[in-house]
Image (cartoon, rainbow, N blue to C red):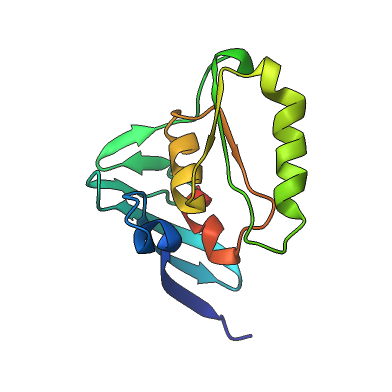
Length: 143
């Protein structure tokens, strides 16, 4: 059996970048037989490098990071993203946010799935959700 490797460098927040919004990152990853092994997410605006590695944990630059330890969402920021035009996912996510709005500390539309996942991994957001990630969008969450 031959192993299949894959790698990709992807810009997340490309529309942000196109419109001059400084919330963008570059993601590179390596997968073996469709399983993410390592991912790197670089935020050039903040000079932050998020890099999880399967079985070793997640890091921000050289420091170990972990998800939020807040016991409930009432003191948390909930990050999410809406889909592009024509996708029913946007209205579905707005319904989810509306249902939980009174029970969370704050909500944020992120505009970059890669940074949303990375900020949740660093404990900045209590949770992040996006129902439609591309396979490479999960590479930075492989640990």
